[in-house]
Length: 239
Image (cartoon, rainbow, N blue to C red; front, side, top):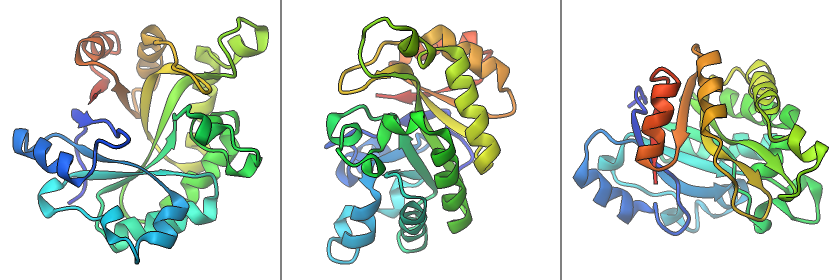
C-alpha cells in the first residue's frame, strides 16, 4: 500500500512506538500514519536476520514508515532496501533531527548522525539519493529548523538557526536527492539539549514551498496554529 496521506501521524518515539504501541493506536484510528522508533542503519543490516522482531510489524499497522538513522549513503541504501523488500514498509525516513549526545557527539565524524547531519547538506542529499535508488516507495527527511552547538547567542549560532539556513538546507537536499517530502520538527536542535520552538519560521517556509509536502511535529494545538499560518500546508505529527 503506497502512502498517500500524512494528515495525522504518530511521531517516532524511542522506547514507545514499537509494534505493540502501533497496534494499539491502530485500534483508535484506521487512518493515522504510524512510524517506527528510529533504527540505526547497521542494526538493520546486521540484526534483521538474527533479531527479526527489530523490524517486524502486523499487516494492520499500515500505512507505516520506518525511520532510519545513520550517515553512510551505501549502508543507508542497504538498510532501506531490507526494510522495504523484506518487511514491506510503506515509506522510509531519514532522521536529521535527533540531538542526543549518543547520536551527535561521537568522536568519529563519519559516525555522527541525527541533527548533526544538518551541518552537511551535501551528505544528506547523497544519502537520500542512494536510498531513493534502492527502493520503490517514498523516501522522506525529518529535520529541525536549525542547529546550534549551544544556547549561546553568537553570530555563527544565529546563522545556523535562521530561515535562510533551513531554506538553503531544504533546497540543497531537494536538488541533490529529488526528495520532496520534508518532516519538520519545529525547533532548533541545540546539540545535546532540547531545542526551542520556531513556529513562525516553519509557517514561512511552508508557504514558500507549496510544491513540497511539509509535515510539522508538535502538540496538536501548536500545529493547528502552524497549519493556519502556512495556509493548511502543514499536516500534524502528533506526540
